[in-house]
Length: 367
Ligand SMILES: Cc1ncc(COP(=O)(O)O)c(C=O)c1O
Image (cartoon, rainbow, N blue to C red):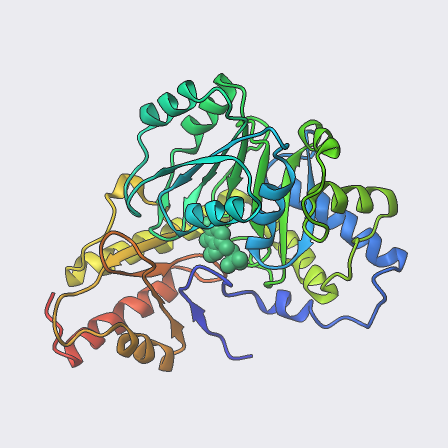
């Protein structure tokens, strides 16, 4: 099969074996065989973040936002109130979801690309004794920023509020120990660093905390976390028709993750990142963020000011060469973005670096 190098932040490049796992004999998802597969997939999803003893995974049909909406709409009681950190498009999206359900909240808003000040956040939490939950994004894909998850989680423990972490584009890419770090709800999807296909999202929930949400009056049906969880616990099946083939592919992707190991995957991604940074330095392109804030999974690059530069033209040039690059998304400076997740390695980034030199030269773009 033709291989494309996807440098967008997911759906990411997948292995041929994950693609082949989509081709399974037709099966009714109400069969025990599919139920067993689902149960195994859920266990493996929690194992990725060392959560098998303390946490349980709830899987939903839909893209990543389905998981975020399920968590946000299901775990905050009528009297609850959530603090949202907005320093990128996905913090902002969480606020949009919370507003649409009419849930009490406050938003700590920063320019997209500004690093959160933990002391300021602590003061907000200290002052607002009504707060029960804190939502933040681990890897803010808008800018490639790794938010200070450890410190933010410490605040949640100190002030006894529940954490809801959007780890969409970091889960399986960076090591996360959900037990040690004491994360209450962690959200990701099947198509980013776990290297499966798009179509499912999951919330990995602390078992005790999730059990308490049974008492909350459901605000929805399809995305209700407790509803989906209790159905699958009682019957071993998805509550609603699952994307059958996507679940088979996810199972394969999870097995391939355990074969590669978390350390192996992170090392492969980081080598690609270092190769990318060398290539960008070589042509003189500047980065949006200081290096110490980088996730090393995605890099936001400041767009050249040359009048000859046009993102879509550059995109089309790369696309013709089987490489997909990604535009910026509202960061405080104009950027384009390169992700180094998925089944690619530093040799693919070397190809990108060479083509970048060629593109800039052919189009007389001076940095
Ligand atoms: C951090 C983060 N949160 C949420 C989402 C939303 O996921 P989806 O586009 O799959 O709904 C994304 C997508 O890129 C993301 O990067």
